[in-house]
Structures are given as structure tokens and as C-alpha cells.
Image (cartoon, rainbow, N blue to C red; front, top):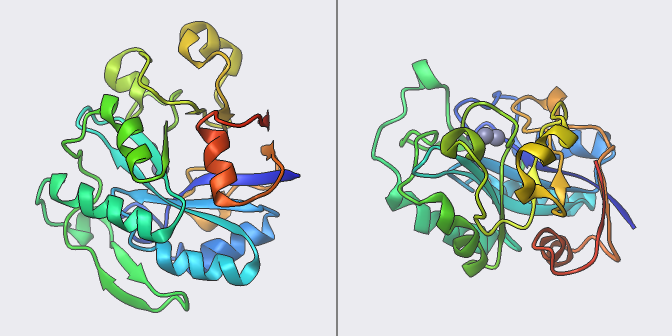
Length: 243
Ligand SMILES: [Zn+2]
Ligand SMILES: [Zn+2]
């Protein structure tokens, strides 16, 4: 089956995320966009994943709880997990490895925790967009130890990408790579031979509802179960990728 996906979406828990990016709103927008599998990947937190998972279950969309981790090198890496429980355990590992800098909502934006009905149930007080002390070369193994998978985010961007931070794309143990919709894949393949033969993901990195991508990029798999998708992202099972 064709699985139309968007595995990099932010909610209102990311300080840069629009206040309308509540779990209920974003999952409903994904359904309107014709997507069959999505991931919620806020900066350094999985705090709104439980609410989004509950909405996705109601709507029959496959949901992968996730996080866009900022590594010690200031490289963004998307980590996805098979269950909310696994994602929350990963967050418990990450939280003490973030600098204890308080958020300033007036400068950086609100960090809102919501329930599945979009009621604000709290805030995160530590600024979530800082760099953790986790090194980029340990993330693939770390995510795997929580049952998940990791891929470097937006490698064609000049900031907060593995390529921008390291000046290259060395072998880091990632099976898949994310390239933005405007990224020139052929040039990137020449520039970074490491991506040859890897699944190349195209996600929206949406911070606003209207930026969630329409059904377009897909992967073809026997089923849309989270474990099947994670196995494909790890390169463990055959999968057809279409950007
Ligand atoms: Zn990013
Ligand atoms: Zn992002």
C-alpha cells in the first residue's frame, strides 16, 4: 500500500510553532491533506504526542511519536518511536541533558502542552530550542535503544543541519536522510555520497497548519503499522520511496 506521509511536524509546544498547531488541529489538517501516516516532532520534547496519538487513533491515521533533537553540535536530528511510552522514556533521557535556560515566551514564543480536545493543560518552562549535550554520532544508536529510529533533518539547509554543523555528512549510522522539498537531490548525491542508496525523506517541517504537506511523497509497504514504517526507515525491510 502507498503510505502518504509527513514525519516532521511541530506543535504549539515548540516555541516557534504557531498557537493553532494544537494536537487536534494538526492531526485533522493532516487528514484533510490526505496523509496516512504522520509524526509529531517538537524541539527536544515529545510532550504533545500523547494527545496527538489519541486524535490520530480516532481518525485512523498512523501516528509516530517523535522529537526533533538538537545535538551538541547544533544539528537537528528527527527521532521517531513505536509508541508514546517509548517516546516519553526517550524524553526522560534527554531532559536532563538540556541546559536549564528558562523560556521567555515574550521573546521565543509559548510552549503549550495540550490535551486531545485542544485544551491547554500546561507549559514547558525550560527553553526547548537549545542544544542538548548528546553528540550527533550517538543519536542513531540511542534512538534504536528506545525502539526508535533517527534521521538527520533538512540536510540541504545552511543552519541546524548535520551538514552545516559538521561541514560534511560523515557516516553517522543513519539509514535515512531528510531533504526539503526544494532540495536538489542530484546535486546533494554528488556532494554527499553517503546518501547514495538511502531512503530520502521529504517532510514539511511544518510550524503552521497550512504548511503540513499535501499527499505527495509516499512509501510503499505491506501495511502502515508504526513498526513496519520504522523498520523501513532503518533499511531493514524493502520499501519503495517516492519523493
Ligand atoms: Zn530543524
Ligand atoms: Zn523541525
